[in-house]
Length: 132
Image 1 (cartoon, helix red, strand yellow):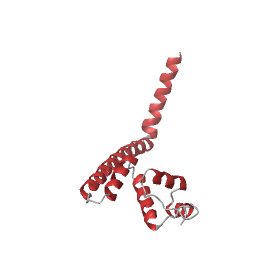
Image 2 (cartoon, rainbow, N blue to C red; image 1 turned 45 degrees about the horizontal axis):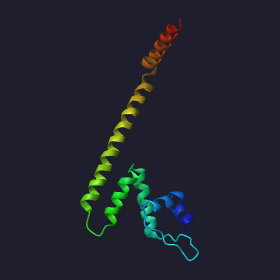
Image 3 (cartoon, rainbow, N blue to C red; image 1 turned 90 degrees about the horizontal axis):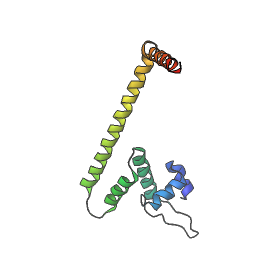
């Protein structure tokens, strides 16, 4: 399939697929006799993997390191797992930070009348005093 079809199949735009290839995140794509990229299922699977890992927040550098380990001839399972565990820790921290922000916003919404409205009125009064 060509890059447009691969883009439709994976949900990754053609420019990003070219970037993935340039950065070595996916193997070099063979081209047919007229120079059009000929993308096979192996490349589709790699594009999908990279897309998933990027959505999980994995940096390009960490992803390159993981793929280098994966593509190596020797067994690098321990190092691959280490990178995945590091990524999981990063994601959990981001999730916890996001949950804290959600909880805080929920509290403000649920206590708008008895807290936030009063606080905002106090701030407006203080601003008016500063103006005088």
